[in-house]
Length: 278
Image 1 (tube, rainbow, N blue to C red):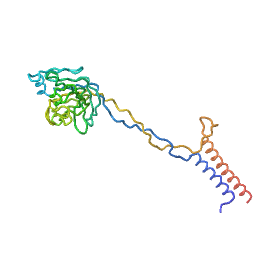
Image 2 (image 1 turned 60 degrees about the vertical axis):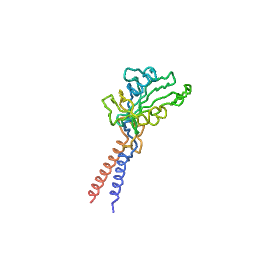
Image 3 (image 1 turned 90 degrees about the vertical axis):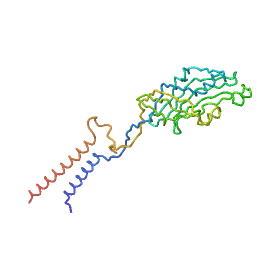
Image 4 (image 1 turned 60 degrees about the horizontal axis):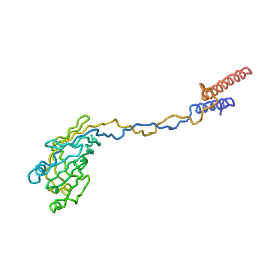
């Protein structure tokens, strides 16, 4: 068993140890760090140009002695033998997946047979996606049967049909730091194109297409995501009346130490008195 003095010292020591635990504090995870995560990268097409002759044999037919026709271009499209040019394209393109959509303005109207043949193709859109590469067109005009019957008033218009398919395996994309170019890409009319321009069966080759685009690939913005991190936070708040440069923890620790010293001194003094009586 402990003597009375030893028990007293033990209790005081325990109090000091408890104070030290309070001074050290209990801690918990109570904060979160913000982690920057790259957003999806996107490239704007700031400029683009599409060069395409449509179909050389059809142009020859229109301008020949049978149709006695011609064609007119609508700005900003232009024609210089042997191809039409659509400048001022814009849209978006993803270099990693090689997908995108680039739109152009302007069109071409083919006419012949004293106005019975009158077909307009306009506003091409170059689309590259998982299904391949296609040129979409607005097409308006009279059907072959109406033209043969002399009916030039029944004009039908469809918008953005997949008119021709581009074979990029035969003419791969040339990708630069800020440009994408394709030269003389073979094209063939699709079933959709044939439905609106019935002069040629699906799969019939049309003129090759050349296009180029300039990209602006800005640095992606950072999406901030909060992730938990460990931090130390005392569960007992500090005394708001304490001086700014002195913590209550120091005072508790100091008080405990003083109590221990006083207890030790008392033990020494009492033992000396006991020896003196002997």
